[in-house]
Length: 269
Image (cartoon, rainbow, N blue to C red; front, side):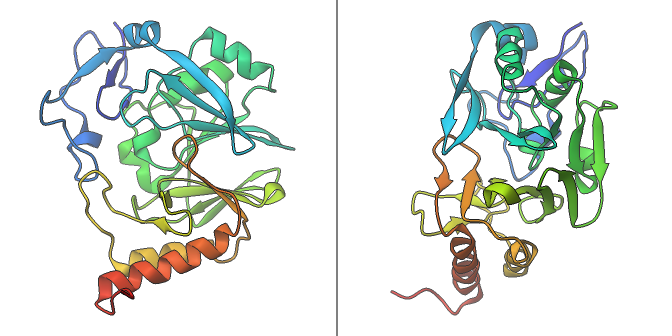
């Protein structure tokens, strides 16, 4: 038996002698089953053999991706705190060489992931570092490979220690969470809060690939959830998606702009 990765979203499924019947994450309106290939899978062993780690500094934090890019193409971030290192978000690739590389950085004490599109090979990561995975309880049904390493939290915030706090923002997913790093005055957001080409603003969507917007109230709720937390920088889901300064103000004015755009008051010409 082997595990299989969905080629569209990189979600890993439990060991099986047969291909999974479908990928519920891709069948959900926030993602998609590719029009040209349909549902497709890759064996875990084949994927690892054909890829390598891409580890580099990304705005002062160690970013971890894989090459060639696969599926959604996100990168993870290694957050170094006094309570131990936390892997923020996850990627589908891990091998012995990468484990050795991150062990020299102090290893990983915990994993936290913004939303189901980036769960990918989180169980492989948790087993490699013997650490827990923190997800919001609202996303329980989206865990395609259940494991005792997964720990669900409830409510609006959850402290990981070392100045690290998970914040449930909702929006893109009901349990969509971001990570506030107080010591660095940084917010790590995945694409719950999306860093866009115009770094004066961020974006919010129910579905990015299918261009489905969020109701204004959902975006206002994201702003309210983040209002108590001070942060200067904001790290998105991909390499180089970083807002380096005034990020709290960027989020506030982006919420205002979004609400004006979708409620009829409109944007200034």
